[in-house]
Image (tube, rainbow, N blue to C red; front, top):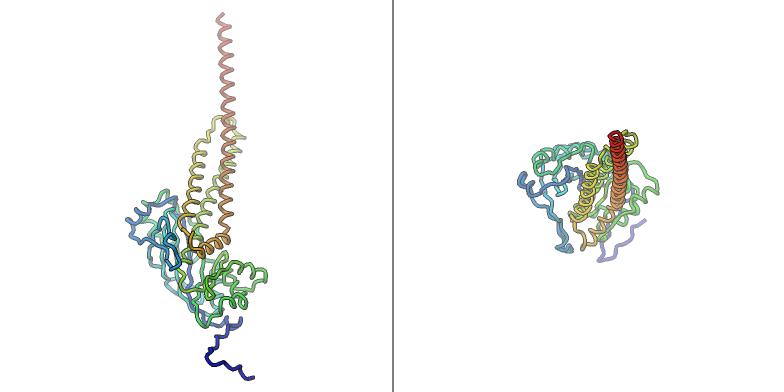
Length: 385
């Protein structure tokens, strides 16, 4: 059959990939790996900058971005040397590495790995990222020496081996050979869902729909698909979007950190109840120290909500604000915050009950002592007469 004629003055649009063609197509872009760690309660950024010289990290600006959109306070940015990592389909590579340090003693390590892979190879890489232990280890090694340099500036330093949060962004460079975003979402939904789910095996229709449920486009040529473990970003000028994603990942880590501490506090609380019930001298125990520690934890939690919520000022840039809200929904940040506040209320309520019960036992004991002293005085008076 003869191909249809092309009218004079018109150019033929590139044919979008069918599913099989996308699997073999060469896709160029950058894999962004964000690994967040918590170093303690707080850090003095000015002192940290004196201990290890760093640049102030400013939010990249576009013409549409108002001057009010910025970090408050601005974090520190360290350019670091990364070790060589061996990634499937890419091979041994030394990624560009940087660390962003915030005043609440949290640090985000970012690794940037350029790639040019087929759709199938990119899917294999995504499946390998589902077990990210090697990259977490590499991220920790990158900032190990920096942590020790900054120890004098960190308040109550504590770096837990088992506390980290990672997120992956597959940034594809727009090109004529790539399907248009709308076609990518429709014709290649299964491939796209597997990529952001880090799942190389085929997914059900329901899982594909859920994986692609949260997406946003600023223009007809760009696309951002957000899932729990990873995101696909089809864009070229996207530094501010990447920083918003990186910060949301860091915020999730901080919520997990405070939630873990509250779990320990609740375990202590329940232990106090059993201790009071089984104690022979319940009036002898004091919960003043525990109540003070809980009060400090509540202040720290409220301060964390305030600082993490205010560090990145997104009001005024509607696109970035929507990106943040969508990712916060994926990370269930509001549920984390409600859970933390609920645990604080439960722990404080139990502490108060235990403390009040102890005070009651103490008051009853004092009343008994007073009665015994009065009886003793009466007996002594009788024997004297």
